[in-house]
Length: 257
Image 1 (cartoon, rainbow, N blue to C red):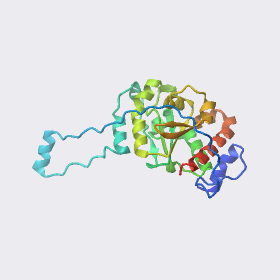
Image 2: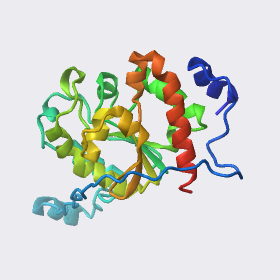
Image 3: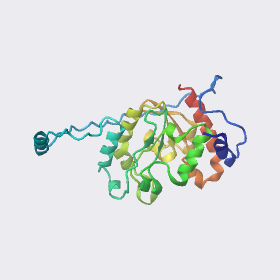
Image 4: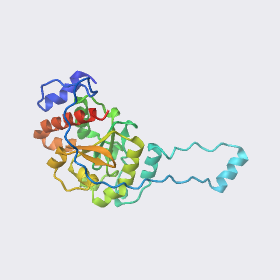
């Protein structure tokens, strides 16, 4: 990542001081306040369904001596995505264009989680695209990261119509998939983007200010909360606040290595 690209975001938010790279250098780590633990519960994991070939297919394979077609493994993220695409646990499956499952590094140290796909993501089938995605990539670059270094997903995998906030029942319908993704990635920390997903996952009614100031856990994984990039596009005056959050994220993550 070039220095010019990293400085573009800093200039945009009014920060002129050069930044260090994301990799922790040989220096004393910034003081870390005592985490505020939030009680969470373990969502049920998704059991892989057994695959049994139909008798007619078995007979045909035996007759012409053709090996079975290669199947996608059901125990990884690719297999989990196939199960999520077939999910009909809530009404959002009827109105979506595409499932937005998640993408990025499969063994990422940090997982960023938004609330639900917007229109651009629903059309592309990919997280954090469009104007909010461009801003998010500049935010990552400002602390020395690329999107391929992290894993990106949403608490709800299908777009709610008119970009409304997801309902609690929709979060509940997707939570087993979210938990299964985290089980497979095993990140060192989670960063929740915005109040809606933070309140839903942490089972709290705390304000965004309280959420940003605290440290929490989800299924035993440390959690920080920062502003969602789409909010920052609407509230340009808070981009400097976002820089403070990113520095806090960088400092905290360096203590988890």
